[in-house]
Image (cartoon, rainbow, N blue to C red; front, side, top):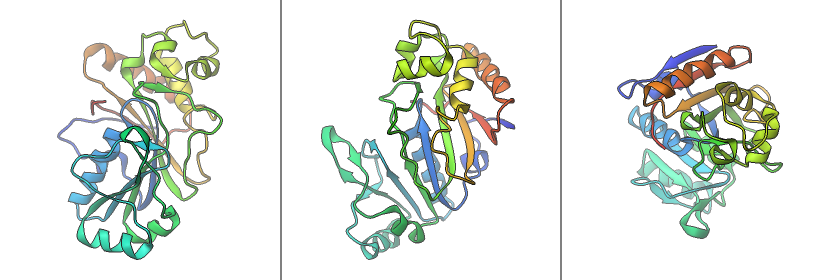
Length: 239
């Protein structure tokens, strides 16, 4: 396992080494921020990039939003813009998956980044039966966890706290430890759930912005060494 301590002057592309094709983001604690920062970095490098969702996201600032009715309309949008968001308007100001199937988008762009899970702004997450919604074409899954969840009670830190507690063998009133965070990130019914055959799996430990969280980050990374994890990126990307 490779552990990378990411500074905001470094390259997210180098940190995660995303493959051409589809990258899906799951978990809590900064998925959208990572998706948009990585997408912008890829576009600035000259790539054609699509951001989208299989669940729900808020409209991204400064990115052309379109719900293409056909592959030709999608192609024309990518000729006008290096970076586009393909999605359609949903309830409460959010966006949902576009009408155009991802299989028809994939040949049009160098990279497609899709948010495949929701956490309602919680730092940690355990998936329900219908989650996550990872496209079968996905070549890299990045699971995110917010380090601000460490030390909180599970009921406060985790979205779907009963499921999170069950994966840890704890109750919702117990405190989240670095071991718990690592366990759920690596668990086949946690953040590895739905991982397509042959897909790479990486982890973002986010919100590493003070001494206590830095200590938690390295403790989580040590726990993750026992699992089959390609890389762990420790960063402070924001919410």
